[in-house]
Image (cartoon, rainbow, N blue to C red; front, side, top):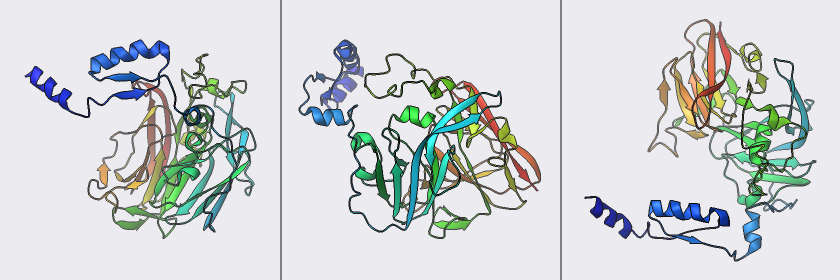
Length: 381
């Protein structure tokens, strides 16, 4: 039986197609061992046909400030300047430095997280980035613009002065934007902000399946974990860049968070801080937008039944996904999980008064053990 199955697999033209890759010489023996175990032939390739094409996806990303291709008159605009000076005091008195984006048209300086972007389905949006320090990008995570406007330097360019990204959202839901240069480090430093796409009716309405329904209140919760070492002002910011060379000092190979936050507010202040703690009235419909900004998996428990209507900006049971998905209910107190950068939009309708805890456990992304806890509250009157 086993021999027959093996013969059938090896005869499959897909499995006999060579896997071609570039690998350092010291890794060749390991790769051969893996290929022998998997039964797949491997062709070790030493020569690169065009070094420029290879380097564009490695470390030698192009710096540029081109004109926006096919630029049209926008329906709404945003301007974001890079800042490197948001100092957040933790409950133990320690000050942690965060980076981010600020809106020069706002009086709020050096915010963390970065200010929200809010648009409607179908709008033409312009986001102008003033890099100001070194090179940066803005990637509108979950949106699908042209590659030139996607903000991923490895497939386009990094901005060293000013560039205007042009994009048009097509699906209402919860997204976020962030710097996509040295992404792992810059995201941890705080270079991200929420991005909300409303249906054509605007704020106060949300898509649920094929319907557009109103809600009374909204909360945006972004649990996050912070390793102070990664925020050290003296850290070499070339660390963590892919193969540039790889972080030989191993400074970014270990992530040991000691502070845990929601939407920029450290725990335990998250229980009462009005930027996070939710106040609502009995009978109101409340929309919770939850984004996992941590590098661990986040386990959330809500005190009321939760009607899950969207995942990662995609409406469950909507025009694009109705053939294979639909909204579903998570009973009160039952846990649900979000992996890194995952978003869930849920509707709740509190049915009793009081102050209720919303605990979030942050788990190690590999081992699964809890290495942090943060919580907020919902007060119903």
